[in-house]
Image 1 (spheres, rainbow, N blue to C red):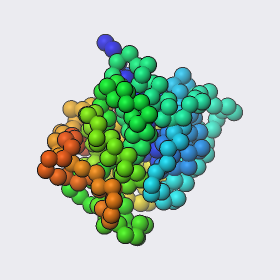
Image 2: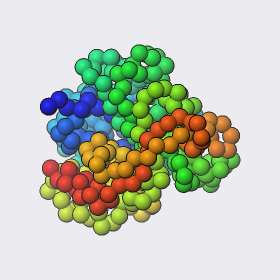
Image 3: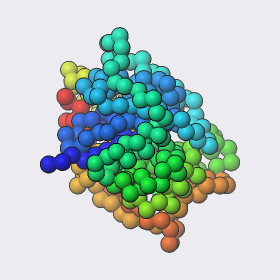
Length: 307
């Protein structure tokens, strides 16, 4: 049975690494590469941490590419500095050298190359902004037909966003960060005919990272992947933190855990609602993860990381 071809595009937040780790445990997936988009991170440590994770999990043959795109609204530096912390975790620094290759091409050029060379349509698993995808589509419109679908953690449809007014004065609180970083590029992807399956805040708000779950990961510490996941989540446990990217990525492993709902939407690119994914009659049709079997999801990630 042929494997599902997937290209990962993440932006270096704590849960981006964990989403990548989960994807690597899926036996039915062939991961063609990992692109790091420089959004919720400082890109050099984010690329380094990604390569070290691939080494740790025995996937050093999978190439990593650094995207050079730039967004419009920077993530707060307090978010981005986590990339330095993860890159310095002792569990990722047991070897002198990194085996996983960093390709010479930019992330956007690498995405074009991988899609053009793929033997079958590829699923894009995107856990950051859509800027690298939009840039690749602009550079090479022919790749659109090689994209099977985009599974994306982003947007807030019928709940408030997470771009807080005290961080971003002038915003009305409706935007989600992965859209807000570069709403123009999100709108560009909305113009395509590619199937989009979103994991919006509407769902992630109901699936928190809990102390109990982090402790369960810690009790699996003789499994290095679970140990690393627990260490990463321990960094963020004092704040409200949710299974954003991991919840989105788990869809590729068990879509039957989820219920999808179709919405007509548009991306707001200007004004106080810049970065909002708005439900509008006659808008671009997308699918959103609407419900999830939470207990099955929690059990799944614990099981996958216990290896």
